[in-house]
Image 1 (spheres, rainbow, N blue to C red):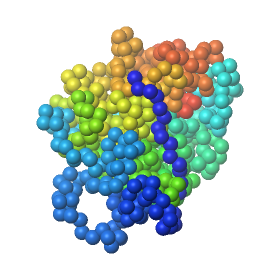
Image 2: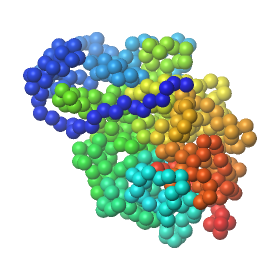
Image 3: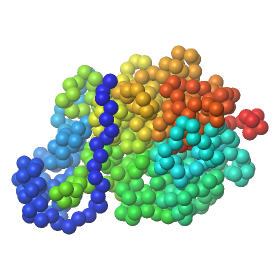
Image 4: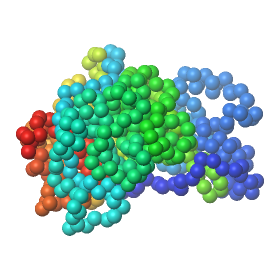
Length: 550
């Protein structure tokens, strides 16, 4: 195991500044041991891959460089690659093509063309039920006041409680959504209608700003009567997709709403802009301050904060605002990302990952606080399905056996091999603040990272043997800020980790934390088709009739 360490924090600044003085440039030149001309160009580029296109010094590219970009689709980062290496990044864009792919390694996961990606709404077509919640309803205080193990609060649900159908207009629910950084939630009915509740200080529910919305309320927006097909939550923003468009609301400090503008926030749902999508968006996921989406072909798109490589575009876009301030070139619209890399376990640490030749399409995505995990789409012929991770690598949450950030989607090599072939390939994924879970076709779960306060981080995927060895088949799983939840095909639920707000569901007399997996007795017999872990809460979508579950 590696020594635990959080991601390196960098000072947040605005994205605009006045031109630096000559003394500032001279100081940076001395500090970085770079010519003053290079320092000036780096500041002027504002984190872009090279000097701005308006610069007269740019001129025509060298023919060899143009040929390289056309053949690989990867633009040289220039000086930024050096900065990324210094920051301990796993890979920079400029070194992707420094070595050819290993001769013995196949860049394809199988034969046949990729199967079109279905929306979350279509994938959950067999689900129809009611919402069960455990955890707090005191949304404004979550994460802001310390809770002792003995503390109780009248708005805490210490065990799973059904949210009565009348809260949803007596309709049945098909999807629920929240995430490890979110204190707000959504539910989508079988007809595609949207309901929301929780914290709303930044209008993340698409309502006028308010401390919180205690219980689910019906929400509307510019999509009219079109069914909501996927919805996701970040810390202070939300995004949803319909059959024809995507809409977002809340904080937009880093461009995470994909509005194509630098507006600080939006108090209402607004239509998103995208670049490079091959069709309508069908799935979305949110980290703390970034957004990830898939179109119907499985193309990956990202926007928002780039500090730890969350955008998967090969760089953070780090640049100097002044001699003592650093900012990042974030992205204000969902943009297609097409470069994926791999690094075999036998490769030396000093060897850079190599680019995967050919397109990679995805079917499942999940975001932690500052990282993303994705599962490759299936194919029309026999195939395996690879897993990729990128972003912040603290606590080993990327599964690459090192606490390094990855600026490009990188293959998780541990989840390759005969044991993950057709019939046992990865199919879905989940992410907590600093942990990751993948579920296979067999219903086995693999975990890496860390969600517990105590103990060491798990640096690479391991089988959840406490489930597999007892013949438990996973039907759904998710991870929160400090806890994880697993629901099985035998209608049993297991949680463990930290649960100061009751999110573990062990009841008023039960523990508020558990270092070992423990059954949630109140959920025994509940057919949970979906589980979502938020910050201070856990949501279940339970099938059947409410009277039967009670």
